[in-house]
Structures are given as structure tokens and as C-alpha cells.
Length: 282
Image (cartoon, rainbow, N blue to C red; front, side):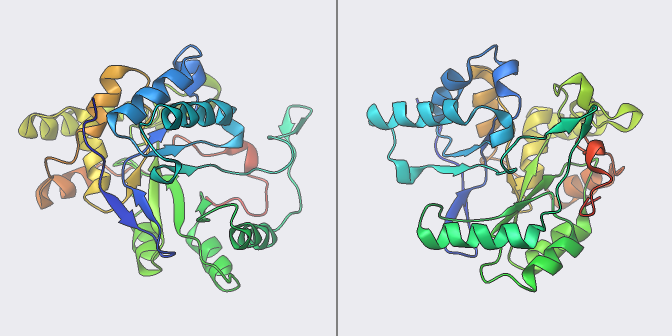
């Protein structure tokens, strides 16, 4: 039974993207191999935005879930906004335990993405983890501007300057790790400044109690209030239902002020292995 479809936001190329999506990072591990089943249930519940990547190793599951629901008559392909990310020919190649980087310039990569859009193989093109200087450089040469910048955002990592800049350039932001990614693999843990305990923050809990909602719903609504898309990863039926029920309440100005006051600059995804890369964004 569908819980209704999330609100959409218009992108600068005229397409519409649902503000709430289902994230899939580490989904196969978190669901003990039940990725396709979870994604099918999400579609049944009303999700029309699925986020994946080559590096997540689950694009096949996403495709199977979408095809299954099309065959069942639940959706048409054009109903779905599916996001993926390209990282090149090989996923994070390593030598002597260290990630190997290339001399590729992201501006050249962008030209290839513009060609893909021109060919009709993709509807919209965007970027992920781009800083303001990187966006400025890209926009100075791009024939087609990015419609989205997908970055880590949550009350422990507010990034007000980046939000303001992207809005000024009509680039929609998508927030990943909205809960601080408490279940990410141990090798990706960032130590004492890891935002993994965000869901347990008493300030978040107090606001949740005020609205008779869960901390997760408050953290998702925090982004919706700012017209920022958000892609939490639900791993079971309860979370699928919980995450989508964020369009029938609002956070007031004081709620937002208090949540933003939690800012600590803590990242759950700092990409430490990439620090020596000339285009490292942080």
C-alpha cells in the first residue's frame, strides 16, 4: 500500500526530482543480500527516487527491482528518478594498500557527461562531493550546468556556505548520510569526530518529542525544509515507512536554528585515501 509520493523539486534542466529517495550505499550487506526485495518494497510504498553508484555494486539489484515493478504495473519507467555515479573504468584501484589516482581532470569528464546527455542516454547530469571552488571552475566552462551536487549534510555538518552558493547557481543539493551513517563499515569510521551518534543526540530527541516524531524523521525533515533532497537508506519495512512520513509536519524556525547550532564540521565520509589527489575537495 502506497503512503503517497514525496514532494518533487524542479531541476535547472526542467526535470523533477523527488525530495526523498532511497539510498543504497552498503545496502546489500545491511540487508543480508535482500537489496532487490527492499527496493521493490520501497517502490510499492511510494518512493520514486533511487540512488546508487557503480561503486556500491548493486546497480543490477536496482535495475531488477525497477523492472519487476514495471512488469507488475506498479510504475512506468518515466515515473522513476534513478541516480548513479561513475568512477571510471576500475573501482578504486589500489597498489600497496593505497588508492591509485589518475591525472583525469573533472572538467574533461564533465564534457563526456554533457555528450551523454546530448545523446539522450541520460536525462540529467550532476556532481557529487564538489566544493565551491570546484563548482566555480566547472561552471566557468560547462555548456550544461550540473543540476545537482550530492554531498554529506546533516546538523553536525551544516555547510551553510555551500548551500547558499548552490542555491545561488540553481544547483539542487542532495544530502547523503543524513543520520551520520551509523551503520557504515568499520574501516570507514572517522574516529572521535565521526557523526555516527547523531540519531542519539538529545537535542534531536527533544525536537522529535515536541512534534511526536522520531529522531530520524526530524533529521529528514531538516533537509526538506531547506528544499534539499535527502537519500536515507532504509533496510527494513519499518524504516521504509518511517522515512517516507516526513511530508505531513514541519519544523519551525527555532527548530531549524537549534539543529544548525549542532554544527561541528564532522564528516562521516572524509575520503582520507584521496587526500593526496589534486582535486581533493575538503
